[in-house]
Length: 168
Image (cartoon, rainbow, N blue to C red; front, side, top):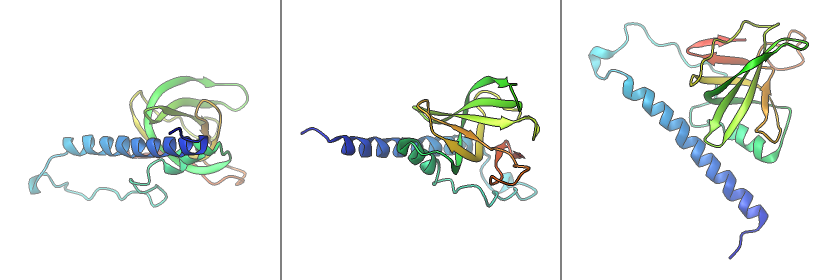
């Protein structure tokens, strides 16, 4: 029995959501394994709380993956992933730092960060990054921009979190 195009799209979305959830959970578990265990390993000072604007860990990239599959643009959302590739800065007009963020095994998103409005994010290949900004769809996976404050106040403030530091 052949699947209709609509059924095939739904199946693909489910597969991507499950894979993304697995990928995010795998990353969380690998970090947890490196943590010391037991009362002697408890930190002397409490860890900073998770920013209230960040998504719950199990929410992951569901909204982003949904926007990709629906080819939606101008959507404010979060992206959680690892730096897959560092790209040269775009120096035409406003200067922008650019890098690819791997969201799922088969999906990367171009993250664009305005260097004229905010300090450079010191990312390296493989770094885990959480970002908030405006998603724009394209055939390559799309891009996330306005990942910094908007001095004109026309966009919701975006940011990039790297190793416990927020860049905006």
